[in-house]
Every structure is written in C-alpha cells, then in structure tokens.
Length: 454
Image (cartoon, rainbow, N blue to C red; front, side, top):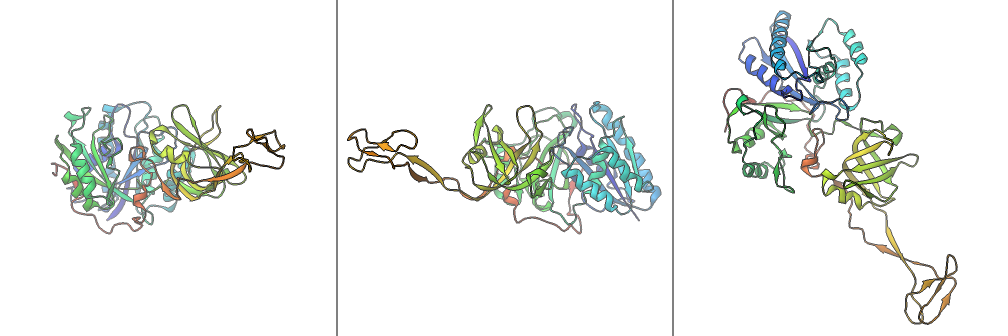
C-alpha cells in the first residue's frame, strides 16, 4: 500500500462553491472503492487570516489516503482533477486560483515546515517553487487557471499534519443544490438547546448577546451548518439534536486547526510585530484608551522601547468596554493580527484576546480643604499654593490631594462575543482541552454521504 496526500485550495469563488464541499463530494464518490483507505479525517486547515488576498475562510483541505500502489495514486489524482474541473466551471471567477496538489509517501519535513509557516506568515510563490524542486519526484499538482496562488494552500493543507499540536473537529452539513442561495432552515431554539447540552464540548454555537445562532453561514455556498467541537462523537450527538427544516444532502467531520490560536506567535519585542502576522505580546499600556469614529476603541502599548497601537472594533461589542477600562501602566498580554500602517496610523494590533496581568493604581486629584472652615480651597496659581474663598486663609505650600479611584476591571482573561470570532481564534472555554496526539482510528460514523442523520 502507498500513502498519498491530496491538498485542495481556492476552489470557492465570489460566485459560490466551497473547498470543503468539493472534498466531501470526492469522499462520497470514492469512499466505497475497495482500493482506497482513508487513514485520517479530511483535514481542514485555516491559513494566515492576515493575508490580504485571502478567500472567504482562507482554508485548504487535505485528504490522507492509502492506495495499492503508485499507479492507483496517479489514476485517482487524474480522476479528481477532472471532477474538480467540472465543479469549478460553474463558479469560475478570475480572482480565484484553484489548485490541487498531491504528495506521494510520507510527508517531507520541508513540506510540513511550509505548511505551518503558511498559518503564521506570508508565503511567496518562489519559496513554494524551491520547496517543490526538492521533491519533484514525489509532488504533483494541477493548476485550473493561470493563477498559482492556490498552490500555497494546497501544499500547506498537506503539510499541517496536526500531529503534536492542538486541533479540533468540525461537522459540516451540506445543502441540496436546489436550496443553494435560500435562507437556511435550522430552528434557532434547537441550536440553543444543543449548545446548552453540549457546553464545554462544542463551542461558538450561539451568541446570546444578540440572540443569534452562529452555526449557519450567510454566504451563498453549499454549506448548511457547521458545528465545532472537541470530539467527533459529541458532534454527531449535537447534530442529531438540531431541528433542521430542509433536507440535508450529506455531512462530513473534519479535523482542523480552528479555534487553536495557531496563527499567533509569541514575541519578545514589539519590533517583531510584523504586518499581516499574528502576535502574542506582553506589554504595558502606555496611553489612556480613546473612542474614535465608528465606535472603535484604541490604546497604545509599549515594551519599554517601542510603542504600537491596539484597536478593538465596534463589532466586538462589550469587549470594547473592557479595553476602555485599561489605564497607563497596566501589564497585559495582547493577542491579535497586525494591521499595516496607513497615512493616519502606524501598524496596529487588532485585538482578539486580552490577558490582564497587573493593574496599576489610579488616582484623582482634588484641591485641599481649608483647615479652618472646611471649604474647598482654590489655587492661587502654579506653585503658589491655595486660598480659601470663604475665610481667606492662605497656604503657599498646600498641594492637591491624591485620592485612589477603585478599579472596576479585574485581572484575568477577556475575549470578544462569539459572533466576533474568526476561524483560528481560540475561545477561553477551550483552555485545558488541548489535544496533541493524532487519533489512532476514525470514529464511526465520521460522515453521512447519502441521507441526513436526524
């Protein structure tokens, strides 16, 4: 038996389509073939969310398979290319650069390095070409347009093996084609109940602040819903609890790097806060937060040498009010993507999560009271002391009195509401649930390819 790994990227377009959907269709077509053995769940890998030219979810998908030999591998790859070519013809858009890649045998370390780098950094195509040149006899790929950008994601989705690092699962259910573009028919009350019953084992199902389910997307693609969680068995249980008022074409469970913070890297200095990358930085707040037009909150942080702006945007709701309570001198860790500078601001960290480590004391200052009559005194000018407006008492050495103001903010973790989460952002609720050992076998069932499971 020969191992092969097939990666897909940029299959979706503004007109529709979805990379996970085409992969699910391929699984449906080949799952029952006796000469194909799926050795892992399909892996949905989200890449660097700061990439300016990213697609909707900036994700690639990889299939890890065993076949009887190399001839079978090439046969499968050619058939898949033909199948995908038909699929993207319906949704073609010049901004999409769909690509399929295949690697024969064990995944080379350099491909793994490229994959994890693509989650945290910008990958130039010439770097991809240099990596491919090292493994020409083991790498095959097909471009479906003149654009080659999808080559990065297709190889990266193979390279991120999710072995030795944290991962989660997502059950994605798909719609029948005659329902594409229509409102999704999933009972919100059943989503709330599912969220309550599976709390801690699934996440980001519902936003109670705005009373809205989060498992159903709003784009015109074939996805009906996606449930994210820690274990496949819980996802199947959660799916069965939903009241879905439309036929489900099929569903598939993916292993994924979603909700792991894999896109962030810890930096020791703000000089390492490179644009289009995600960072974790321990810093001191260096300016009082301000509100700017649009309802956003901005404050500055410093590592003792360099200062950088941190922005908390209006869609994050109450998270802005947490940031607004910060004061100069507070010790914090900021988590987020670095936005490039513009004519109006320098590089800015878009805040995704906040750890308040130490709060500085805050004071307000008042004029002293007259020691004779108790009336609040008034300044006679800078450095000249104070005079009582009632009895006329003067004190040239009197100074303002510092009164400590109780801080309402507490140390600890803070995050935005569920609706503001992007794919890779790790919810606080997942802390302590990290997994780093790949599953030894696939849960049954990990898909339903013909009928809905309700």
